Amino acid sequence: MGLNDTPSGERVSIAFFGCRNAGKSSLVNAVIGQELSVVSEIGGTTTDPVKKAMELLPLGPVMIIDTPGFDDTGALGEKRVDSARKILRSCNIAVLVTDASRELNDCEKELISLFCEREIPYITVKNKSDLLKDAPRNTSRIVYTSALNKQGIEELKDMLAGIYRPPEKQVRLVGDLISAGDIVLLVTPIDSAAPKGRLILPQQQAIRDVIDSGAAAIVTRETELETTLGALKEPPALVVTDSQVFGVVSKIVPESVPLTSFSILMARYKGFLKTAVKGARVIDSLKDGDKVLISEGCTHHRQCDDIGTVKLPRWLWERTGAELDLNWSSGSGFPQDLSEFRLVIHCGGCMLNAAEMEYRMKSAQQQGVPFTNYGTAIAYMNGILERSLSPIPNIV
Image (cartoon, rainbow, N blue to C red):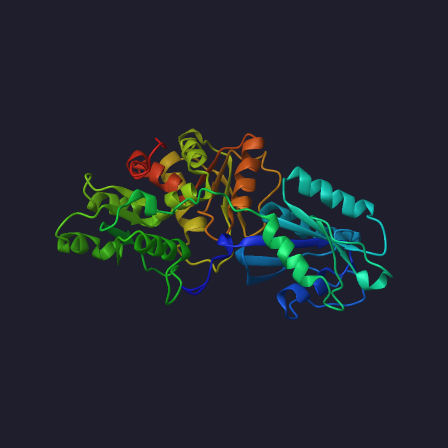
């Protein structure tokens, strides 16, 4: 992701659902103005969700998603339907694409029930209206379109822009914890796992939020942290570190200087920090054989000292002394059944939107499984959880 791109987790997610051959892919292509999805008269052409980032005013940055047919059959078809169901977890707006020449079928009625159950605002699109002699008038939630003739596309866009209202209170990543003129020190390790030539997303977002607040962001590695602190005329107003070096950084940064991590800030930003704090305190009760799920929201190439598969397991063993049954998931592969796990430790979720993170957290809560994240767990295992939460009001 470039520095000028809006992260996928910050975009309004608009997903197109429907039966096979309803014209979903053709409609998506018409909305975005390019051939994103392969179209065919053969049902089931779309086999996996297809995504496209774009701007849709006045909504702003959005993610358009074309999903497989919800009525697909057979062993492979069931997997396609499951991939479409997973999109519901992160969907902000749903578009039900139907064939205008017939009434709603049971599959489409099921989709409407799912939208209502999950409280997802939705629009019903009566596609293929060119097959009708006289198409009825649009209503507030129903629009008649012809992807073939590009009819009704602008009306659909206008309807999409009007149906969703982002939360009024916009949570800041770090900006509300600092003041204009402050110096904020960001500690970013550059090791084998760091992406070449760029910073990871939470670090980029933190820098931008600090700058937007009229404060100054100083970025350093943990190896230069002591020198950087010594070069400052006054102590920084806040130090934000990568969780992986929490232990090292906490020993260098004076107790009088507020300290937290990118991951803890991301948990607050995504709305599950209190849950993460409660979940982290379960770590000391883990015993031999307990199953722990370590989950990441994105997929990336594993390095020799990967945080999820190497460092966290090592720190868990050092803290608990227990032979744990560790399991991993990444990307969209978050398990539906969590009942076998004693604890879920999730990444900061920077690549997931708030709806998906809320789904994962609530899924764990509903099944009675404690839920925390990397940074909160690492702070707890380093004995500095209270200190790392002190810059954030109403948490401890």
